[in-house]
Amino acid sequence: MDRFMVEKSPPLRGNIRISGAKNSALPILAASLLGTEDIILENVPKLKDVEVMCEVLSYLGAKVELLDKGIIKINSANINKHETPYELMSRMRASFLVAGPLLTRLGRAKTSLPGGCAIGTRPIDLHLKGFRALGARIDVDHGNIGAHADELIGERIYLDFPSVGATENVMMAAVMAEGETIIDNAAMEPEIVDLSNFLNKLGGRIKGAGTSTIRIRGVKKLGGATHSVIPDRIEVGTFMVAAAITKGDITIEKVIPSHVKPMIAKLRETGCKVIEEEDNIRVIGIDEPKAIDIKTLPYPGFPTDMQPQFMALMCVSKGTSVAIETVFENRFMHVDELKRMGADIKIDGRSAIIQGVDSLMSAPVKASDLRAGAALVLAGLISDGITEISNIYHIDRGYEDLEEKFAKLGGKLYRA
Ligand code: UD1
Image 1 (cartoon, protein in one colour):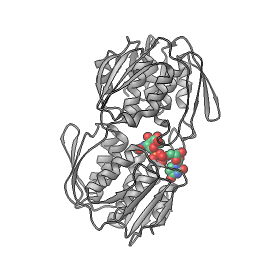
Image 2 (cartoon, rainbow, N blue to C red):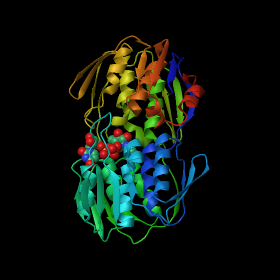
Image 3 (cartoon, protein in one colour):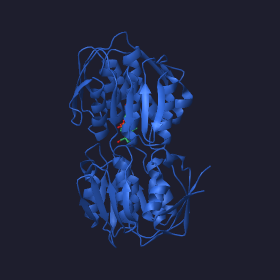
């Protein structure tokens, strides 16, 4: 199985162009099941998770064609299956995002129940609450979950937590329901706005995405469209931290600065210089970044998907930092690995207390999930010797051309 070898690298310098957002591409690909005409998606990142979602769509009967790098053509006119097999579901939790589109398009959807994952149990009760409110019957048997509805009828739905996946799934189910659906306490992430824009291009009537109340007026049919996926704000954040941790100077191109406000604010608190231009962000590291505290929250709060990477920086910042994880219950799997590299971290419930050390040292470490893996890559860039990271299939799920991008900046990261 592939591993990454990360060598201590000079301060990273140069320009880097950001890929399309994984977390936008996945729901938009799932939503492509709703249109009956050709759909062209641009700026789609080449990632393992995207490949799995394309396999799911093909399995369900959609025609999926790669036209060029990052450009995918989908035609779902003749989808003919409503069941997603365990083998595909087990490879990626986000496959459950096809449930909403299948339910509204075919009147039924059946998938295996998504299992737990490294960062927590990740239930789907809120997705199901939304489907039920729209009139679907839900059955669970032998590890499968089925949803059926002769007709979906718009309803007012309150999400107990602003879950990203539940907001997306309910939005997709409601887009062709009869009448109006209102989602209260909806997630406000930029990826929700991207999905809503895409659905509206297909002919949907959705208002309020990006706020906590989304109103969806059901339409009879959706057609085709061309849509470009927004830049990946978590990839942006990861390279911002790469500049800070290596005391480098990186200009990150093709970004939407308003999507990464918490990362900009927190890096400024460390003392690093962050310069925002129209669609560029330049981060200039400093010799002794200061300790900071972060608390993960739904958007526009600090993203849980950036907590591990910031923790890598906190490990070598001056003073004591605290990271509080409120979104997932078990998202500190990277802590033991960072400790193997010489970090001084204590866990107390949902808080990690990080005492900055002068330097880290290489060690064989394991990526337990996608962002934990990214944190280990960042730590490896400043550790003496060669850090060997195993289980990098997690990292491949979410970062396009990672070695090439780091190489361009002078980072020494090799696949072995
Ligand atoms: C998405 C992102 C993931 C990110 C997360 C939070 C995708 C493909 N993945 O995941 O990268 O880390 O948002 O920003 O977009 N919850 C429930 N019941 C539910 C659904 C969720 O209790 O029915 C809880 C979860 O257990 C978790 C919290 O809500 O504690 C947030 O989960 P959610 O926002 O749904 O995350 P995902 O959509 O799975």
